[in-house]
Length: 218
Image (cartoon, rainbow, N blue to C red; front, side, top):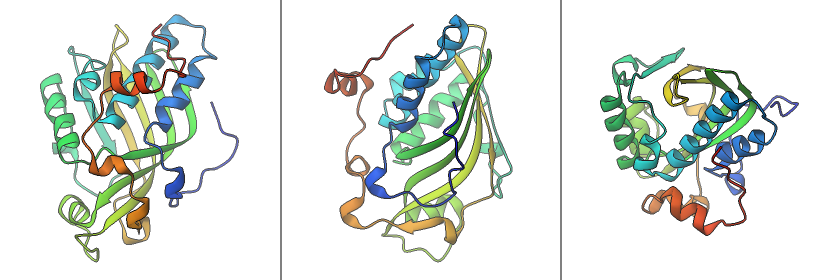
């Protein structure tokens, strides 16, 4: 899948901010696939993306391989290697922390979505809701107000890797640098996504609330 144009690395209108965007695009792309292996890993990716954006830790971990894991970030200005999980237990704690710290509120604007036999690649601009406190403490960026909520964005190429059973076993990403003041924007209070202030939602709750969705499991 290719949207047919370059998506600019810039802020998104918060009226269009949708944490389920990547999962919904993957579900639509699934309709074009007939190869069983490609469908299997696309379904895994779709379910992974939905569970992560809702903060459903149990459903998220159900998409991850217990056999092996390897998460890698290339091209970042930050030293993040020591934070990347390399086995299932580390991954369990990693995702639990992301949800507990409320840093999973992300809109992924996809330009390309490419599926193979053992990997799926995204070319995307990633938009994340973060507080000034998180931006300072996690990324070391000064010049922000700790009490303000911001939209941060960056361009990324992300490869999702799958094991022989079609379970997710790694994310290898290529970043375009680190956090900077010209890639954050204050979000007016009225446009902060309600999810930022609420408890995580389960995938089951979400799908029950959206019976109109065609959500195949194979």
